[in-house]
Every structure is written in C-alpha cells, then in structure tokens.
Image (cartoon, rainbow, N blue to C red):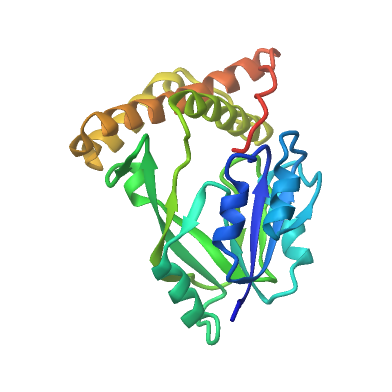
Length: 258
C-alpha cells in the first residue's frame, strides 16, 4: 500500500539519475518532478518512471518546490533532490509518522558520500535538512540555501537520506561556482559588500572549523580535500560579490542541477 505523501523533486538536467530517484520512491502515493527547463531528457525519463512532471518551473529551487507543493494531492510533502535516496529505515519511519504527526515539519540527517567514501565529520557529517512537512508550508525563495517557513518546533526523523552530491571532481567544481554565484547575488541584493576579511578571513576560518574543530582531519585525504574546497567555495562567493560591486557581473553559471 502506498504512503499518503507527495514526494517533490526539483530538477534541471538530471537525466543520469532522475529515473532511479523516482523509481526508488514508488511507494509514495504521488511523485511530482518540478523541472526548470532541462534539455537532456530529464522530463521524458521522469514521466516514464511514473512521476507527474511540471515543466519550466522556476527561477529558483524554492519556486520549483512551492509550485509542486501547490499541485500536490496529499496533506504531507517530502522534499527530495535527485541526488538523494531513502534508506529503508527512513521509509519505515515515515510510514509510522504520517498517521499521527506531532509537528508541522521534520528534520532528517543526510549521510554524504564523496568520491566513493562517506564523510562522517566536518560540515558534511553534521548535515540536517528539513524535508517532511505539512502542505501549508512554503519555502522562502532565495537563490541558494532556501529555508522552509513553518510555525512551531520541528521534529526529528532518525532514519537517514543517502546523498551523493558530486559525480566527479569536475562536477563539484562546476557546482561550487554556481552556488557561489547565486550566494553572491543574494548578498548583493541584501546590500552586502565584500571586505578584505570576507575574501581571506572567512575562507580560512571555514577551513579551520571544518578540518580541525569539526574533525574532518580524521577523514584523511577526503576530509582535507572536502574542507579545502568548502573554503574555496566561500572565497568564490565573496569574489563574485566583489565583481558585482565593480559593475562586472560574472558570466552566467553553466546549466545543471544545483
């Protein structure tokens, strides 16, 4: 029997993994893919896998999710990304929670896998995201790091999501630049400007926090690379902000799912 929940998946050029993602949640009563204009076959593959597809939704991930939520037929929503997969424990916990929910939203921990290994420390080892929520809730529309708006405290689901955000190192570098650009644009719209401290102090502090204070050093070379590239993402964000200040907007980020 299917679970009375709608799975919402925002996509942009996810042909390599959308079919597997949709099929893996076939136990849900409804799966909605909100596509932002893919050109690689994502839409047709999602439909073939059994999802309802809403085309050319955007311009942000939050807008994609909100449009799909408005179309959902179930009172509870689970926001999923194309690079995430349910564990059996999380699915079973969802089945136990939905009949009698105690909160309007629930957080879940993501287990992050990087180049074939799980990162258990640093930022990646402390990755909690709000994903299960009542249909009345909506995502605050920002270009990056969107947040769910709801009243009251959130509950906690003990099952986990499996998350593989990067297919290759090149894919990671592309996504880093895209996220940094979007983050800079959000800051610029808020009136923020890049200082010298933002350009060197913040990235250095981010590396030290992840690698030393949060223990990524014990993840070996994987922890070192992940921490260094995380710090570089912070530098890129403020470098893009500095470029916006100078009236030289960066080129549009390459297409792809954030």
